[in-house]
Amino acid sequence: MIRKSAPKVSSVKTVKSEGVQHITLYPGDYHVSKQNVIVSTLLGSCVSACLYDPVTRIIGMNHFLLSSKRYAKDMPVHLTEAGRYGVHAMELVINDMLKLGAKRHNLKAKAFGGGAVLETAPGFDNFLCVGEVNCRFIMEFLKNDGIPLVSYDLGGQTGRVIRFSSHDFSVLVRKIKVTTTSKLVQKERQYWKKTMERKEPKTLEPELWG
Image (cartoon, rainbow, N blue to C red; front, side, top):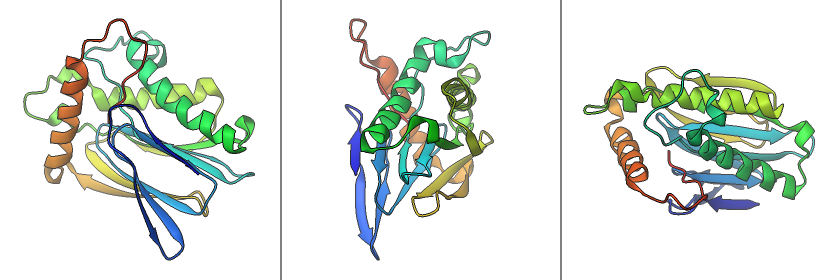
């Protein structure tokens, strides 16, 4: 089992119940395992990719969000500066899955999140389109990387709680109305602002937030 978190973000929470390990991901986290686990997270504008190799039964999941104010509509998101953050989040999971024994040609994916949560928050400009851009990114990345997207639930006006099971690779999705996700909106807004206020022009280390 590999459990990691990107720099400067919260730690993964682990609980064991009835022989099954329950993992909770926070913004910027990811988890990779070959054990019997259930990985959960709460998503607003953020996106989670649930990856699995059905042959070796190795799974991986992340929780991330692209951080930028403006996005070029005429350019694929994964090729933009903001897209590099998402590529980093995806490669962390994929590379660690391969280290555990997964095969890249076996990988399949399910994707969730990207709700218009931040866009509806007071004081946020509509041009941000954070959820929309995250949805575009994950679809583009998987297509360009040749990883089949088996199922997805992206976009919309709601937040989501998802639970990814290694037992049968199923993902349970529970929708949450925006009106009941004030804490989620506040947290995502704080992460967005914190990320955008950082000035590190000389570093190539991506920053992840979700």
